[in-house]
Length: 442
Image (cartoon, rainbow, N blue to C red):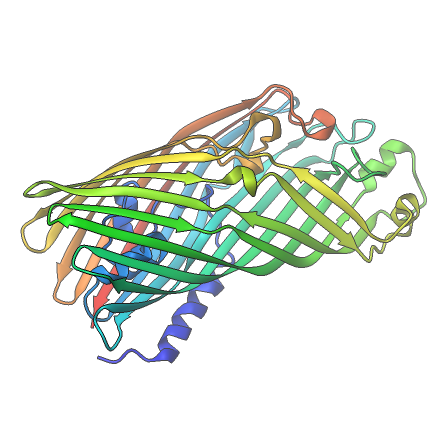
């Protein structure tokens, strides 16, 4: 069966159009396909689908046979609580959205070379909280009960090639275009702007842009029962552009500034850096009906999520322009995330010819320092369990997975963010997901 190029384009557009508005909890995903999710993300040495190979280890493309199409959809549910100096009833929106994505692979003229294409999320952090804005800014300004929304989303369009070097060794690589969207709709305190540092305003910021990254991978199979996998992803830098608008009325009122406009609009630019990452693991046929997967990941957050530069130009508020001495300004938001280690184990057991059961666990170190922690950057989940099953019928595979990221709590003593708004605050989050993957063999 031929799979036309226009069908791939339709698939990519469908994925991008929906992923752009989806909300996802967490930072980097813990497995992409249903199978990988149920194994706790431990699939770098055991890959069975185009999606797992392109997003996990491109050398795994050589494990695929014939033309294969993956279509996945995930539903995510988040619960959480937040307390600060003025309130202990902060809540997060429970339903985080539905996210579809997919991948396709096919052999080239020589079966030693396998081509893969995908459209799938690469990085996803989103939060939609509602809590009382504590006094802060200059003079103890508060904007009252507010929605606090933030999102850093990255959708990756990738093309990859897997190459069979010999019977034991395969190599692979991908080139990806990352489409990034950034959103912030919340009270915002300037951190390092020379004149406005410490001032608070309502801010609604939206930017988007693109950047490039690549992945490289290897699979080594010394014998039929053991496979070793390695994968590396490069760092990505995105210069995104958009607009920022808001209202500084409460801050002006606190300072006694009256008779001037309080609303504003700027052209906005944000520089977002996504981390390089290294993964390694083994897949071992421990028993006749049980395969054990082990994996470790290193994520270089400290070299990417250290600071978030924000550039604002062409400001429309004459009072702010006069105060700053320009219609443009720059600010830098400190993030200072630490490098992260993730360790996973998964077991896969076939039952008969058509059915398989899976289970997995992963542990991740917390990359978010308490000094810069806010509910909108609370990617603090550490312990994850997953379970799932797969069923094969003819040329169709159906995999369903459930994943629970166990409750995690983090507290702030003294925040390094200006105004002390997040001093003595506490955030708690839990996330659950359901993922369905359908794979079609042509």
